Length: 443
Ligand SMILES: [Zn+2]
Image (tube, rainbow, N blue to C red; front, top):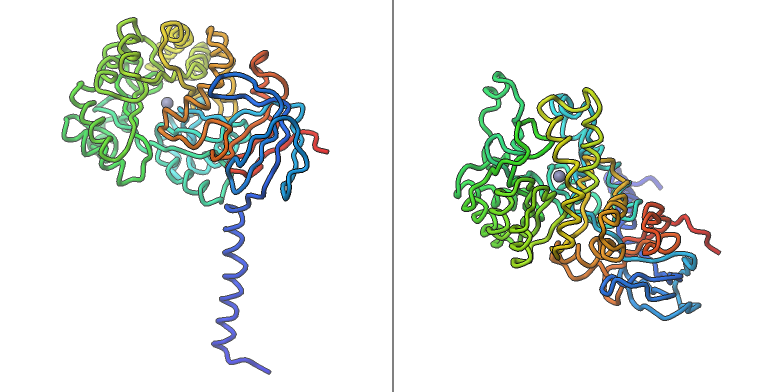
C-alpha cells in the first residue's frame, strides 16, 4: 500500500539518522575488554621493570594488573605481548602538530590556508600516535585545538591533545605572527594584539590569557625570549618583563591553566622561572643560578634535544633557512643536548618533549636516545615521558599502568632499559582501551 509522501520522507530521514549516528558513536566508544600478556612491564613510578604481568583492560581503563601470565580472563580478548615490554603510553610535551619545517616553511605561511595546516596535522597526529605517543602538549598553532576535538570525537586517530592554541609573544618577539612581513603587508594587516598573541603590557597579558580561554586552549604558551626559527635577529633576548609574565601566570591560574615558557637566553628564562611558569622549553643558556632557582621553585625543564640537533644540522645546508635564521640555528641548536646533560646532573626535573614540527612527526622517540646520550638514565627518560609528563600536565589518571588509570599502553620489542632505541620500534599502541596498532605475532 502506498504511503503518504510525508511519512515516506520521515522514514527516509529516520533511516539516514539510524545509519549515520551509530557510525560516529562506535568509532569513539569501541573499547572492548582486553587481557594484555606482557613479557615485562615498566613501572613508571619506580623506573624499574617488574616482570611479566597480565594487564586487564575494561571500559578504557586498566582494571587489574595480575602477576605472571593469567589466562583466560573472562570476557576479555587476549593479546600476546609476551616478547614485549609494556610501558604506559608516552607523552610528548612539546609538539606543533600542524607544522613541519622545510625550506618552504616561510613561503607557505603566505600561500597556505589554516585548513591546509589542519589537514597536515591530521596526518601528523596519526603518525605521532602510531609512534607510541598517546598524549601530546601542542605548544602553538590554532589547528591543534580542532584536531584535538576531532580526535576526542573519534573521527580521526591521534594522541590525546593539550593544545595551547595561539602562543603569546611581544611585538617582534618569537611568535609575533607578522614577523618578516614587508611594509605593505604590515600596513594592511596592522599591528597584532592580544587576540593574535601579541602583548605589550600587564593588562594585555591578562587579556591574551582570557582570549585563550575563549578560544578553548588547554595550556598557555609564552615566548619569554627570542627563538631560532622566527624571522628576527635575536634568538635569546628577553622579550617579556617579569611583571608581564607574572600577569600571564596569575591570570592563567584563574582558569586552571599551566604556563609553558619557551626560553633560550638566561635573562628571559630567569624572569619566567621567577614569575612561576610550570616549564621551561629548550632552556639553551640555562646557567647554575637558574638551575638552582628551578629546583627551588619546582620548575620543569623540557629540553627538546631533537629540535636542537635538527636545526643545527639543517643550518649546514645552503638555502634551507633564511639568512636571518641560519646563524641562530647553527649556534643555539647545537647547545641544547649539553644543557640537558648539565641540568640532569644538577638535579633539575626533566620532562620529555621534542618540538616536533621542527623535526619530523613520528620520530619523537629519537629524543629518548638523545637523552641517554646526554647521560640521563634510560629509566629516567621513560619516566620523563610517562609519570613525570602527567605531573607537568597536572593530571593523575595517566602515565602509570595501575588500576583505575587510562589504558594508554605501548609495547616495544625487548628491554628499553638495556637498549633505548627499541622505543623507535613500537609495535603495539593502545589509547583509552582501544587498540590502534598491533604488529606483534598474536596467536
Ligand atoms: Zn616549539
